[in-house]
Image (tube, rainbow, N blue to C red; front, top):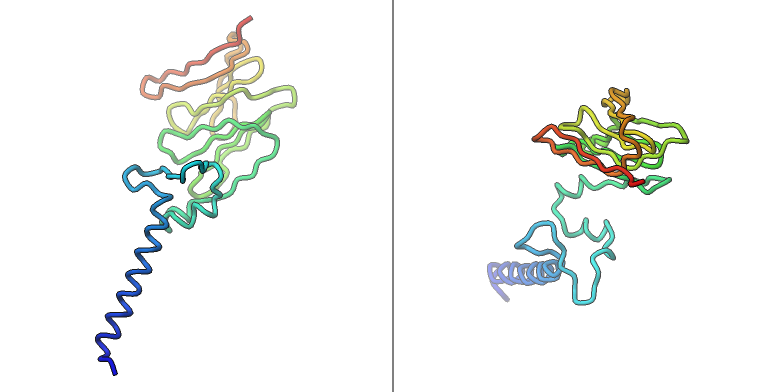
Length: 175
């Protein structure tokens, strides 16, 4: 009969081997040297990974931040605030601000059916945002109230905010 200490050592050794085997299987998906990257096998595409598969390989504190946001009537433009707390979403004729950590809706703005959103950006922080509409550029606060309308710049297409320079830039459609 074996001594109890040898039996325990064997069990620990088996568990360590099993842990090493599982770790080796997981390492092929995660690049340990560069965070945020997935290493696919040769010929495998990373867009084929589902969220549930990714959940199996990330730490628990990241798993609880994963949520599903199903939005009809796309495509959507998005922008994150400079502090990373708020998410600005804009689709055909509506936009919304979402506190993505708590999943709270901070603002919901619906424009008329004739208005189409081309692009949108937070301005300097998450207190104001600019919306490039079909005919003009408007600036709104987080309650959805229009602060300013720049109608002299017709058909703005793309927006970019240079937050440290307090500068909002845009491009317009060529005639």
